[in-house]
Length: 205
Image (cartoon, rainbow, N blue to C red):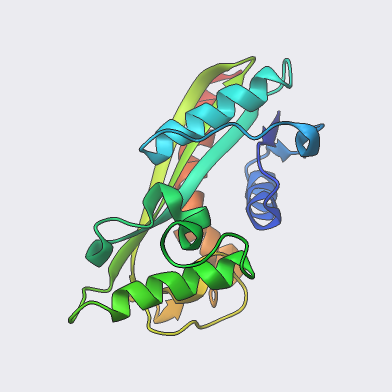
């Protein structure tokens, strides 16, 4: 069985491909994704946006099982922000759009917002919502989370996005310091993907 992630994010694609191999599922690049228009993510929830992407991309790839995710960071002290705006949060709250490397800008943005608060909670969680669709119809859904804390400076170089700031207290390591195989067992994306694969095997598409 082959799934086609609706993402051009190299880090996400690599994580899905490595994990799917262990589960006996193939992951391939969605044909023509570079030329497909990005759907407008208008939902207020991660799952809502995952479904929008799954429907849109699967409608342009007839017959294929298209996997779409929406994931991000929720910080308690910021009222759940960046939330569904995680990928472009700095553009909304801190900087002019495209003013430098996106991941660095996003990390600097949340640190500056937290620094402006008196004794803010550093509690946070990563959330991942997955939707699997074929021919414009969502067939399966799953969600995964992982709890952690936001550091005041980045640590590690193995991750992407907010990983260098996200500490897993039980390990004393950030998501950018954890070995890839261990990270997949602990991460929000890993939890969501294993849940979806369990449903997929039962459904026997």
